[in-house]
Image 1: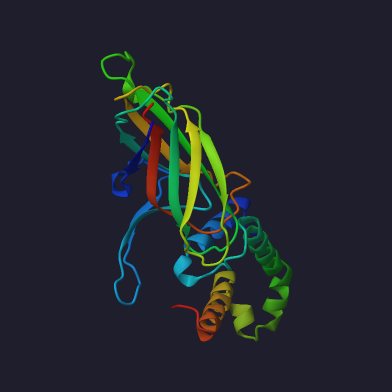
Image 2: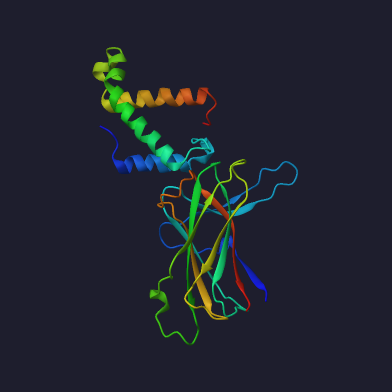
Length: 172
Length: 87
């Protein structure tokens, strides 16, 4: 039994016509060897969403996913962010449905508090048990990630800047 | 006339997006910031007459509301820069 990890590239995020996070690149401000950070900046005042598509190879029978969101706060050193993910698994040559009119499944969410200290410190939020609709090995899975800024528990001011999204699952 | 709820919400959102100007203390929550926006807008209404009375003639009598608001905004902005706020 092993856990399979797949990073969903930030630059591969897909957006709908409205309510999407800003895709940008932080140039890095280190003194000796700065490095750039590709990121999605999720707004604090309105709900924004980003989407990915991936193919879960070696997916076992458990067929639920764990989503890890790596982010930092643009400016805040307190408050919480509420993240939500939804998925839809499509089985090729089996599912006889209009793919374009599908909806994502039930949303799973988590609330993560900024631990204080340095504002732009690295924070990881983990959402477990995402059910994309009984996914099976080699399906294609569509994933939607949003900062649920309208949730009363989302109290952090400023953008939540996501720089890595990882999905994982068991191969058994 | 105070801002509408939507206009106050727009100010609130814009403040949080203006990260380069560092407009919000890191320890402030969204609810705290919204309360400050509301209080600021309420305070302007409560003190508008006092501000107008402080303006000397002939400016007070001849300037329209837009010109008086611009005057206040320009002075406030200059004060912000004087204490080190980014241009």
